[in-house]
Length: 280
Length: 280
Image (cartoon, rainbow over all chains, first blue to last red; front, side, top):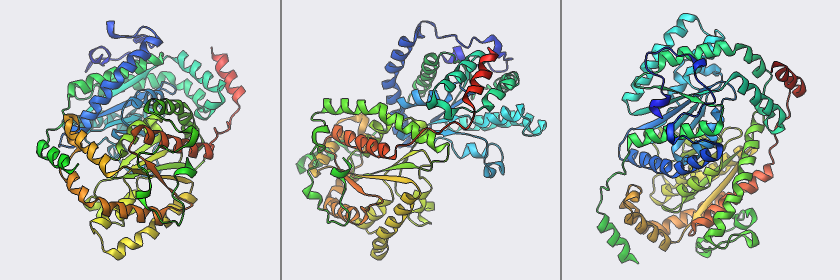
């Protein structure tokens, strides 16, 4: 999956050439919703086991940790991914952070400041629902900063992410790619369900006029910031079950590659067992 | 369950009079592990729905939030509760915080400082794995502060918790009560499983000599800090399935009592629907 969905370093990205309803993954990919849900359920135990090993290893000095970055247009499923994929993990080892428009305090600092403060600690799996990429996406589309400042951010992001990778943080950056029409249908579904009205704002419709500008901003970000240290993955996201499966699978592949190990005991197991047994 | 497990305000507490392997709850209480797991599964959907409503309400200004405080001796199941109960919720709305021995920075401040910084935000469910109570438990048993300082902390905790309650935070404080013998068996089980060695330290055995002192410190804390604003609950915890069921049930009762509501839309739903439909 990593090779299949990765944005090649240094290549031009044209999002319109990606099929948002595709289900890539060869013979491993599920073919239906039922199939997809079953495949995710099968991953739950290996994912939880690997997470526990990652956490356990950190107690013995292993600095490694994972950061899942979720980006995508409104309704693309960032929240749904947290709800359905991150729930597979032990919440004690997860740190989920949603980034909204910067607060006045956050605006007083460099754009990476607020992100640095929310990074996962050793052994943790962090999740960013939106991220520092907003500062080259909405900031670019809505001209929230001078163009020269925005242009400088891509390089600063690459430096930042490389430093994190060098320090043992594995970045898994996912762009949840939905079609313009799929967004329309999802917004209509939100409007049809009073329990979802709170997620809706009329400005979501206004924003659709900016769709091409956002797609272009994403293309530039994916092009310039898909690096060997921190590649971008494009996740076809019109089918929620595929999106959840693909991201679970990506996390499983990354965790498997890290292969974290339970630490060896630094005490005499047999002597401890004897002490406890003799008590009884 | 709230009435059944609550420590009555102002009454003396004798932990030895509680049966750690009991399964109170009347006809609602499960009678076996299978029964308990099924009952927890049945609560998953109502819990998740209520959590979503709590979160949704916060987007319209509802300040309410929940803080589950977990305390108990080593191996009593604080981590297991997070793993099995908190996993039922959407991780986006949960904030789990484990408190260890205070860091040098934390020691520079009042004992409540580090706790205040980790409180759940509006609409969130926070979980403390250990808490400010350590400062009247281990601190008392190991004499980590002058006795007069420790004596003053109970009142300061009560003031702190009342202020939180007045501000819309519902405290659910659970003491996970296991027997001395159950701890011995659990420590032996950890030693028997190499995947659990990292959770073990020989000092866990040494600490057993302090068991009576800890029980007394807990009795004093439960007695002095079970208040109307923030009662303590004693959870019989020798049976893990009962512990998980009882805490799930307590959370369900509290969330049901809060009865958070989806906010009413502040926009014209029909007009928005028309705009989107005419697009297609």
